[in-house]
Image 1 (tube, one colour):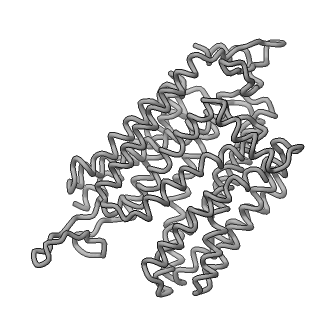
Image 2: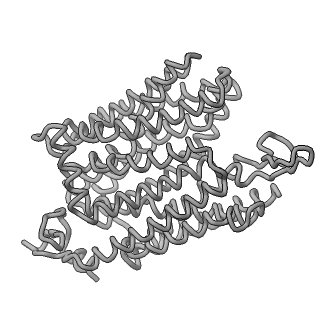
Length: 470
C-alpha cells in the first residue's frame, strides 16, 4: 500500500507544476514594480515567521515523550497551548490595533523564541510556560501579520484584486516552507536530539525579527481608543455586521475541522489489526511492514495545498470568491466523510484527504481576501483573534472528550456543512449589498451594508469596481 502514497505524491507534484506554470503564463499578473517590492518584503518575513512555527511542530510530542512525561501530561500541555491562544488572543489583537501591528509581529518573535528556550528544560512548569507563550504567539501569527499587510496594501493604493495575489503566494510559499522545515527539523533532530529543531527555530525567529525592524513601517488600527474600547468595538462589529459574523463562523468551523484533521489523519490512514485474543482493534502506529510513510503523506498534503493556491487564482479569474467558496466548503465536507464511508480503505481515504487539503489551499487566500474586503481596519487584528476563540474552543473540547475516530470525523463533516451554510448566507448578503455607493474623481469605492452602516472603504480604480459588481 505504500506505493499508493508515493505514487500519489509524484502525480500531485506534476499537477502542481502544470498549474503553477499555467497561472504564471496564462492568467493576468500584476506588473507594478512597487507592488512586487511590497509583496517581496512581506512574503520574506511571513515565510520566516511560518518557518519558525513549522520547525517546532514535528518534534513537540517526541521531545515531551523523551523527557519521560505521561500521555496525560502531554495532553494537558497541548490543551494549554490552544487554551492560551483562545483566552489571550483577543487581548494581543487589541494591543496590535492600538500600539502597532509591526510591534506585535516583533513581539511574536520574542514570545515564540522564549517558548523555544523553555524546551531545554525537563520541567513540567517551565514547559507549561512555553506552551502559554506559544499559544499567544500563534494568535499573533494568524492576525497581526495579515493586518499589517492589508493596511499597507490599501495605504499604498494597490488594486484590490492584487490582495488575493499576495495571499495566494503566501499559501504557496507556506507549503514549500512546511516541506523544507520538516526535512531540516528531522536532519537536526537525528544529529543533535529532539531539542535541536527548536534552536533552529529560535535562530529563524531572530532573523525574522531583525528584518522586520529594518524593513517594515508601523501601522495601527484605532490608536485613540483603549484596549477595552477596541474589544467592545470589535464585538459590536461582529454582532451588527452579518458579513463579519459569517466570516467568523466560517473560519472557526473550517479551521477547527482542519486542526482536528491534523490530529486524526495518521490513525485514519494507518492499517488496523484485529487481536482475536482480546477482540480489540488497534492501529499499527509504530514502524513495521504495515506502517505508513508519514513523510511522503505530509509532503503530498503540502503539494495539495499548493495546488489549491493555484486553483484559487484560476477560480478568481472567472468568478467572485463569495460564490465559488460555497462549493469548496461543500466539497471539503464530502472529502472528510471518506473515513466514515470507506473506513479501512486506504486508497479512498487518502484521496479524500488530498481533496480536503486542496480545499485548504483554496480556503486560506479566499478567506484572507474576504477579510480584507469586509473587516474594518480600526479593529482588524482584534476581530481576527475574536474569530479564533470558537476555533480553539472546538479543538479543546474534541481533545478532552476522547471520542472515537468515526465520531470525530462526523463532527468535522457537520462543522464543514455548517460552514457551507454560512458561506451561502454571506453570498446572499454580498448579492444584496450595493458595492458601489459613489465614485469621486473616478477612483474611490465605498462599500456599505444594506442597513446603511459603513463597512469599509477602499481605493480602487473604477474599472475594477465595475468588474467586481458583475
